Length: 200
Image 1 (tube, rainbow, N blue to C red):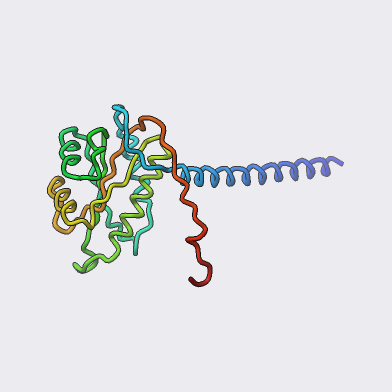
Image 2: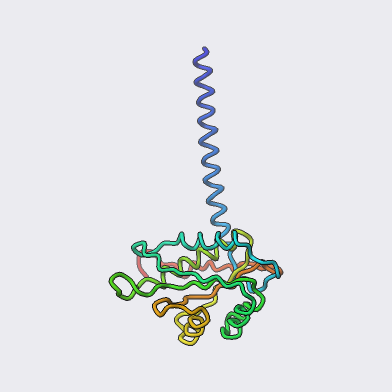
């Protein structure tokens, strides 16, 4: 009888543990999906600075992105000086919000690959890193927006000069970042008509 009670108790404990794990897994999945669907482009910010810990969180997330043959071509330039942000805002027509943002991270890519060949995947890899960074900003309560630099030759040249980039490193985008001012809502971009199964 005692053994039977122990067996029942053990079974109940196992079921409880499995249920807890399932709920935890579902909860994590829900949180990830909620973060993806909540991400939005934020262009207005408060004066509150972005902390060093938050910056590292963003960069760690960016560097967790997928990358061809694990080459990791991404390079990041973190700009927080007011004078530099204002100068970039003047030079970049689609990044005027830099005048208000306390921080910008410029995602760049190493364009040379193995044996000095041109890296054919740096744009894809750096784009994946950028998306990770934007999702991380959303997750920790920051606002951010992707403003394109490459392949526009004028913007690419201006940003490269501002940041004193090596000749083999190209700026993909500038991301203004800060604490959101006002209410920002994500856009519903779900369009089933853009989906094809099997063939077009």
